[in-house]
Image (cartoon, rainbow, N blue to C red):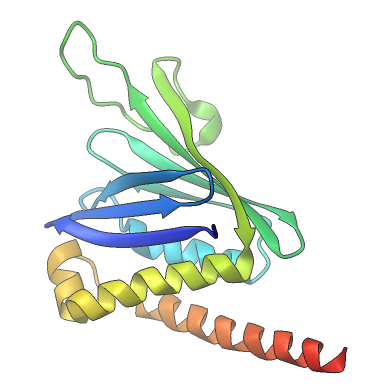
Length: 179
């Protein structure tokens, strides 16, 4: 199974992201109050499509966070890992963690667990990202997206990914016709 990413808004200000691969089927969330995770995700996928070797996106949650770590493994392939950062409850009461934004600055009481470790091609990552955003546009429209997520739809990154996808298709077609 290819990597699949699906977004939805289960309630105001919360994004739900289902990630599926051959070995994983997990759902994570992001809270709007802490960051515009969906725009950051699209910006990161665009950077990878344009050749960036490594990238990271954080889906902030209340409490906790999910770190997406992307690393090119070969010319046109990328490793996708998602880590859940959380703090254990202390004596039955929950203590919200302060999530560090630097990977190496994680305090000892913050736990991290890898919940997704997959690999896909860059075009596959672009395609599943665009499909997820297409679903949001078809379901909510740009006004509904803003009403649910409280941020504007990331049209700039969406359009750039669409252009990249079209150019990549043309290059693939040209290479196939030469052979």
